[in-house]
Length: 317
Ligand code: GLU
Image 1 (cartoon, rainbow, N blue to C red):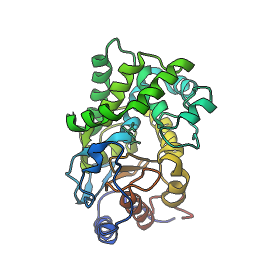
Image 2 (cartoon, rainbow, N blue to C red; image 1 turned 135 degrees about the vertical axis):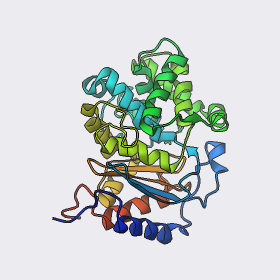
Image 3 (spheres, rainbow, N blue to C red; image 1 turned 45 degrees about the vertical axis):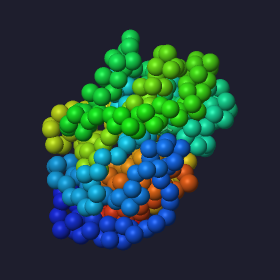
Image 4 (spheres, protein in one colour; image 1 turned 180 degrees about the horizontal axis):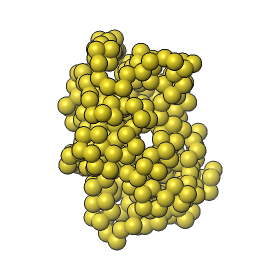
């Protein structure tokens, strides 16, 4: 049986140092530019964090830089909606299958008569937001924010510059929201939902926040630092299933092949990997590959997964 660490020790610290050294100078990829703010984030930033279920953690690089959570937010909104509606309703109204198309594809929606297929493409994420029981945009937002704060163990805030930048340029998402409504998969006012979705993508987090949020999933839904429950234990497996199948856009299979872990990335440059019952890894590096995943973040996760035997397939990896 290959040994895995269960707490921060010298092997873990060395692996993190090595990952930083090996990949910090990697110049591949480009910042997202379709959201103007993201193009302006310094590309050289790079941070890696790991946190175990016992709350011990180790971090290297720019782990205190606040970046936009973007698509990683979809994981935590999903968590709250699962607690409200349950996994069966979520699966029948949205699904857990890859679309085989980019995250903002209209074609994917048309092909499946409006069914988004999973909550991590933009259509599915907006449909998820629309499932929240709320009468106003503020009430919808409050639920989302409360959940994110439980996961992070502190009060997160929206970066208004990111929000304004996205809100001015999100015509494509607004189109998707209307299309969802025309097919019967939008369960609240489409423009209200799109605005709340845009706001959730604009939440500012650090790599340190992200690793706590991931460690909360690894720990069965209980934040290992605060001891507070952020999501019901029975909903953790559905979340990790979605991450396993759909977490890294249309190269999720490549990621699983190399890292062997449920993951989620965002176009802000963040990336999260969860080792159930053990730990979470978070990384931040703005340049993305063509699919929209942080280049250095993926390399760091792959390196740590291999070096520390973290892959779920580690017996054979
Ligand atoms: N706010 C971004 C969008 O809706 C998030 C995309 C992402 O990170 O994948 O396009």
